[in-house]
Image (cartoon, rainbow, N blue to C red; front, side, top):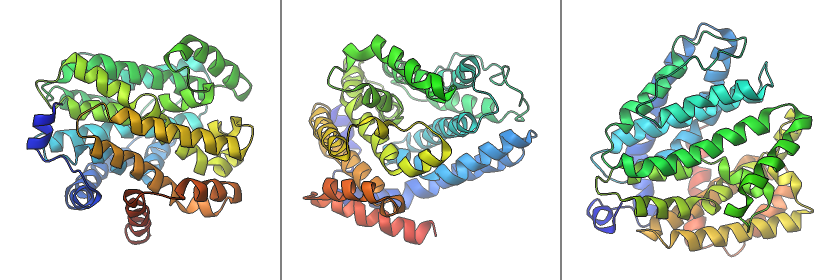
Length: 361
C-alpha cells in the first residue's frame, strides 16, 4: 500500500485515534463475526471437534481482536478485511487447539489439517477432507466454511496477486512449525533443528528457537491482507512489507506469547521457546534485541507510526496479562522490559488492563 493511499484513508498515527477506531468499529465487528462462527462450531456433530472449536473461540478471542487492528484503517474494504482476518485466525486457533490436545501425534495428520491454511490463502484451491488421517471426521462443514470464507474475501482484494507469494511463504512456514511442534515430544526438538538448518541463512541473527517463534505469527499475513486492498500494490512493495514484519515483528509477537505461557505450557507438557535460553538475563537481552530490530525494520515501509504502535501494543498487551503476576521470573523480566517505556507503550499497557477488567470479566 503506498503512502498516498494510506494518507487518504487516514491511517491511525497515534494511540488515541487507533483505539477510538478499535472500540467503535473493530471490537463490535470482530465479535459479530466470532458469534457467527461460535454458532456454527456449536453445531459440529463430532463431540471432540465441537469441543476444540468452541474452546478455541472462547479462550483465544483476543487473537482475532488483536488481528482486527489491521482493519482499523478506514478503507471501503474494512468489513472484508475483518471477515478475512477473523476467519483465518479462527482456523489457526482451532487447529492449534486440535493439535495441542490431539488424539493423534502424526506429522502427516497435522500437515493435512494445516493444508486448510494454505488453501484459505489461495482463491483457486479446492478444499479437501482435512480430517482424512484422523479418527474425528464430521465437523458439519465448519473447517471448509472457514476456508471458503477466506477465499471469498481474498477475491475482493484488488492487489492480492502481488501479495500472494509473500503470504504463501509465511503460511508455509507457519504450517511447518505447527507440524514439528506437535509431533511426539521426543521428536519435536530434533525436527525443529533440522528444519531450521534449511532456513537459518534467512535469519542468521536469530537463534533456532527465535526463528521458529517468528514463523508462528499471523501478523505478517494480516499486514499483507491490508496491503492487498490497494489495487496498485506492487511486488516490490509487498516484498518490503514481508521483510519488515518477518522475522522480527513476528518473532516478538510469539516470544511474548511464550513468555507469559511458560507455567501453563509446563503443566500441559507443551513446547515453549522461552525455555531454550541459558538464563532469564539472556532471554531479556534477546527479547530487547528483537524489539529494537523490529522498530528499525518497520521504518522501511509507509506510515511507520502505525507499525510502531503495533510493536508497542504487543509489549503492552502481553506484559499487562494477569499471567505475568503469577510467575515470579516472568514478572521480573516484564518489569525490566517495561522500564523506561515510551508513552505509547504505557498508554496501551493501561488500556489493555482496562479492557480486561471491563470487557472480559
